Image (cartoon, rainbow, N blue to C red; front, side):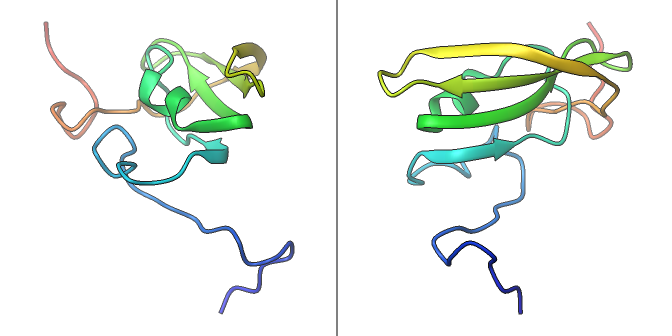
Length: 104
């Protein structure tokens, strides 16, 4: 079994966070998104706890994106800044085709 190096009050969730999988979950102190979003997903920003951080690639599909650091302040304010250029596969919503491409 996995032995947490920093306590036991954390867990890893995997799946498409743009579905209802986060419904009922408490806010997260850290979120890593492993696929590129065309734009910043409001549902993931909303899932951040005050003081939380998220890293997410944002930009056009099948091209270079910016790996963004998103930080939510204690007052709920949100700020973000780019860390570096990256190339990730697209983040898809459940209504999109498996390969992430949607015509039109």
